[in-house]
Image (cartoon, rainbow, N blue to C red; front, side, top):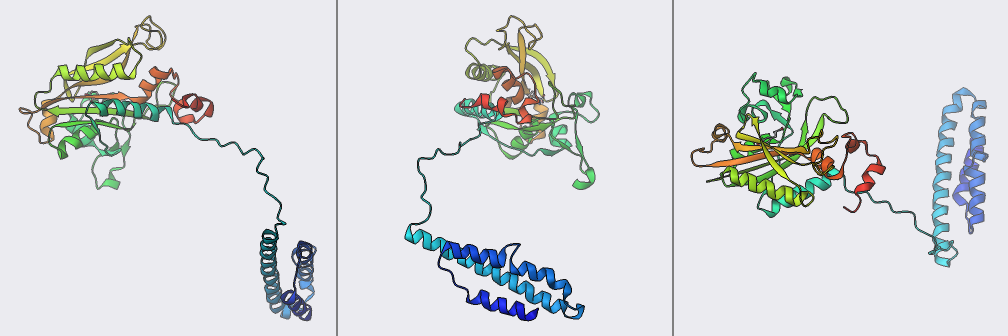
Length: 345
Ligand code: DAH
């Protein structure tokens, strides 16, 4: 058996080929499953157990040598074919494979549009953490411990132990970034803050545990409610259809005083009344208000000298109104029949 192996080793070493046919002959004889090497592997069980290991090793080496030789021969043949022009010609007239590019996600599209509108009137874009401490998400925004206003936002809490005992959570709104901005920057501050937010909601057509908001804040000397109204009127005029009506409705948020919710005339029925606007003709798009002096003071800015307004809106909601998307789950299902409808917008 060993003699046979060694003999084959010699043969492989001294083998030469000059044509693709000979390459194929080499493959049949040494590599293929019907070749001599496979046959020898089958005979291995006939070798006396004491010698089997040694023979097995040699046989493996032979197999590897055959493989290496085959690869070298193949390469040689390829090179030869290219040089002599006998390689199969490339057919340049064949149609190409379809080149499918993705489309921008509707939420990215609307977020970009919102950023664009605010950038043009002097707002810059800021960012903050999604895993946040209780203080930045609630405390600094005037939600006292155990205050019922905390129930407005069903919160996912994070294991305290992982953060050295500090109360941590997934932010329930982008308002945390207001606080971080005011802490690290002195006025004038004029920023918008888009980002992901989380709430402990059961996923349905109307609610999701992950969604997106854009927060806005403007702090400077002599900023008044008029500036808030001007800014948001401008925004609505730029983003929605011409003729869209806007109204401010008194509301409550712990971090603004006075507070207002902003409604626009229903984009679906034009204000006549339909399912989307619950037959009122109006739909809410944002919360807003004058930043509470206590919140400004919490960030180390003098509320006697500086005032400002803030607002927050949901990107899913705005997209729903702009493009009539009636089920929130569509945004995360990645169904191309849905996504393709936003191509080229
Ligand atoms: N954070 C509020 C929410 O998630 C929205 C909001 C309301 C943001 C009023 C603001 C504001 O900045 O002034 O529902």
